[in-house]
Amino acid sequence: QQPQPPRRGAFIVFEGIDRCGKSTQTALLAASLPNSLLRRFPDRTTKTGAIISSYLSHPSSSSASSPSAAATPSPPLPDEAIHLLFSANRWESAASLTALLRAGTNVIVDRYAYSGAAYTAAKGGGGGGGGVAGGLGLEWCKAPDRGLPTPDLVVYVDVAPAVAAARAGYGEERYERIEFQEKVAAAFAELRDERWVVVDGTRPVEEVQRTIEKVAREVVAKAGMEPLREDLWC
Ligand code: NYM
Ligand code: MG
Image 1 (cartoon, helix red, strand yellow):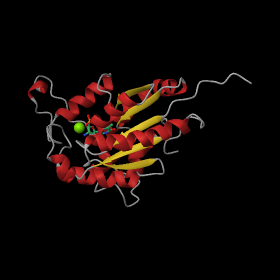
Image 2: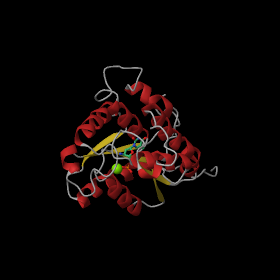
Image 3: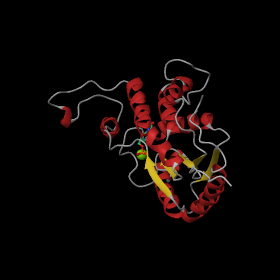
Image 4: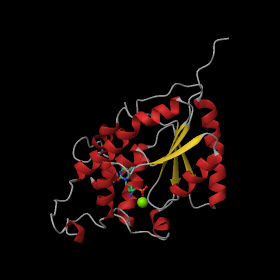
């Protein structure tokens, strides 16, 4: 028998609208799944992450009129520019994610490229559909993330925007408005592929956790037999 290389880890992505319960569920899965590590996007600890975090902290789409920007007001970031920064923020981590996966660690991430495409497409005219290639159409939005590591599983935590809006802390950040979140949800629906599992995020936390853990364990068992792919949306 040849010595076997280490089994690779599984790459598990969580997606959903704001306040759907992703952060709770990613933490619970990371705690229950052996040999796993939790990351999140945007990663606010990097230089691009700091710009993104400041962008998100502005409650609406308008202007640089915050007190902190008073000395040298900078123009607001165009939608295209912030979109590319979110993507760059993922590319900054891509090599370290693949290294972890190859070394056998299961990597769980709270949001990924699907959020990137869905949130920007939601700005571009309702769900991002209609085969729009330019502007902020869905294909345009997906392009910068093409070739990122491909998840083995996407857990979509499904909660209606009106339900999420009633949860604590809602409305603190940009994008947390029901009408916008409806468009984000519609764009997510267009991004669904064969790797997605949709879980009902209105069920009790422990029940949602058990459902996710069961699927995740199956994916971890299978991932070891398949090569890691770095061909998202290629
Ligand atoms: N978001 C997140 C984007 O608009 N594009 C992206 O690529 C990613 C990863 O940032 N409202 C949005 C979705 C959220 C916000 O994420 C911050 P979180 O998980 O709510 O901290
Ligand atoms: Mg949020």
